[in-house]
Length: 305
Ligand code: SF4
Image (cartoon, rainbow, N blue to C red; front, top):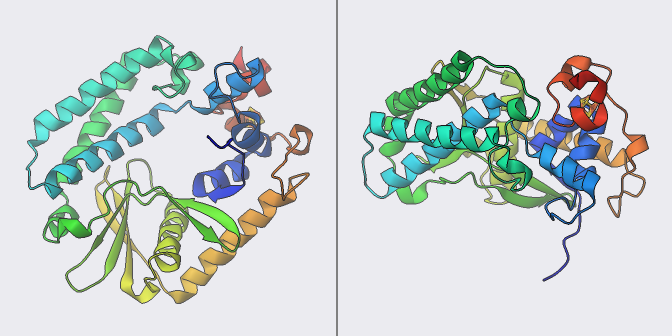
């Protein structure tokens, strides 16, 4: 098997991490590299384990996304879903994952559920966990009642893009990862790209994210902006918000992406070989970010006591 190399690629979450804290970005994309191997150097393995931690809100969001994906698979095969038993199964699965995380299984199996709250012993009352599972159940209930879902189900399932696509494509020499939540073609030949949201609204972030999906549609599928609709579906409210999309917006997204790639590469000692040095990546001064940072134990252990 060819040896894995840490090649530079761009994603929206990478951009987010880079904006938040340069040191965090280093740990996540460089320091933890290779730590999937249990025999990796101890500090690399530690960073890798920490890298996998999810906050409880991220975990809940993932549970909703996975459940929706499962529901679409069933719909695509002509099956209906009994909503409450389905939600009951999702919550039950989450209980199992919660127990696994609480028991610290992720330290040996980093790909299993690893909750930040467990690693950092955040003292949460049982009601906080219950509120989380209630929120997941509510998001899913809202999903099944969404008029948008009824619209989607009127279209041909063979034209649905169900799995988070997790597609990589080349953009001006950089590999760009996108993972649209859902896409479908309407009867009149329009491509609708949907982003399911389970948390509070961050309109700007969602607009950029959806814009990156549409960039993929343009670059890889050859779908011009005039035939694309972008939709943010906030399942908590629930509210569905269309995002404006046009050739001019596409150019803005490209420019934003170019700028992001340039800024990231400017931090590398060798941009060609994607080589980074820890000392070049400054720590944020905003300790509120550190409080919820996966790498706090390594980076600012004094905050963990
Ligand atoms: S603990 Fe703070 S400074 Fe260190 S990586 Fe995390 S966010 Fe950055």
